[in-house]
Length: 409
Ligand code: GLY
Image (cartoon, rainbow, N blue to C red):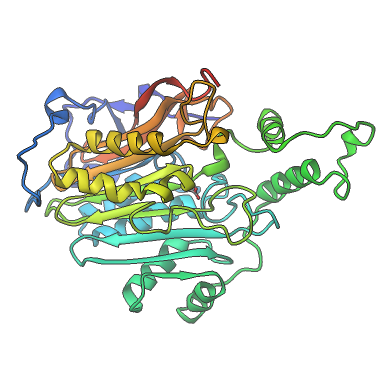
């Protein structure tokens, strides 16, 4: 799988003006956002509101936001940043960014071609929040629309509600003029589902190569096998994109969109469309969102917690660490813990504050994603995407627990 190499990085001291940026948004930067000691200092005396009338414009996202281009020239963060710089409303710019990933059939975690549920149906979740307008919208278990983030935006703009689900969400989308498709599977996602089905229900769905064996695997064993065979990308089980941005006026917004947990029980809704879980934005404080095990996030409403920590003066990195500590402490079920007691899943938070300071922190900064997680990692390192006027870059995430998810498994 092609990866963005460090040789595409542009030196940090080369600032692009708006025209240059729009022309050359594929350029990367050196680690513009590596967290300095000064940035990570916690200010216990900070005011409850850290609103800034002027900020350094920035867009951040999960790493798949600087990977897929859907056949075009710009990634999600480049698209969003360019539009933001041109004066587009921040949320509309972010949604145009995540649309690149939703529409790209190569990303099997979001939108069109996302891995389907247990019945083979692609069900999508998304929500968005507009800081200055103090408005939000979301959809869950939506079928037939490639861009659930746009439907979430329509819920925000055109209804009195914050969340529409299932058939109601689809009927709303149809009435708002969205095209409803019978099936959002691509050949790749359909084949991945069929392979999963053959291995979990071998009596009914026969796998040609297994006709002569009697081996039955448990669900984890099946997943490992599908990953080893390249049928599904490792960790894609909980793929998602979260994208947050702030413009030069300090206007903050965010959006999260996903096809959710692969092979989920039909109707399962994850953290992504739930305000406070997969995304939370307070226009005077900051924005936070997540990728990874949605159930852990739903139980702790972690994005809300991250924003509240930033309200208390914590740097985005320390706010994310606090949410991860809470999840770690609340993970007491044996089935969710490694032999050393730590969580046996990964989850990542992405946060920016009203000044444009930002961070992304995972439970484990290293994950065994060698097979490729649609650009979420480089080698074992969990990454995130950043775009500033210096260009786009994919940077290393910080981690709460040292080592890799798979260590001491
Ligand atoms: N975080 C995505 C999901 O669990 O659905």
